[in-house]
Amino acid sequence: DFLSLDEWTPSSADGTLMLGVLREPAASSVWGVFQSAKGLSESALGVIVHPSAEVAPSAVLGPGTWVQPHAVIASMSRLGLCSYVNRHASVGHHNVWGAFCRINPGAHTAGSVVMGDRVTIGMGALVREGTRVGDGAVIGAGSTVLSDVEAGQTVMGTPAKPRLPKQTTP
Image (cartoon, rainbow, N blue to C red):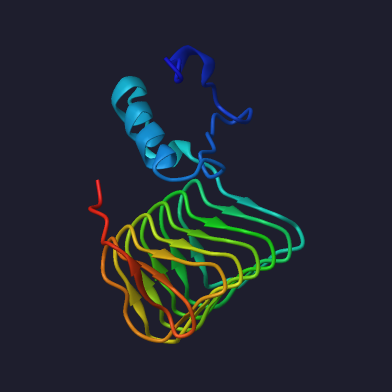
């Protein structure tokens, strides 16, 4: 059994846990195990922001969120449970993210981007203002997203186009 619950203990003296370093689908699966087996709630999760990251005072970071060095999160953005903002990535103003979203190094979302749960944005990708990205979508590295992305869809290229069959979200 890869996951022995007895080995998982709070990450800090105040009892918070951090799942943000896990990639999908492991992070949401592990969280589900914790919730059912240990009776944990989202309030048991901490938030980690590197000192060199810039987070606007009006931004809201969901429980379990990690923000890496030199990342930027602009005003009025709301990131969901266990989001992960990698180094040198930026999240534009008024973004709304679901749970377990991940933006990789050097990627950027413009303003008012809405993302469902379990979305992954590849390294160096760009997402245009006002774009909607569905649950479980994957945006390939270096892609430029100019239009909405359906749930479970993988898009790549400039402009980004569907390249792989749609995946069903768990």
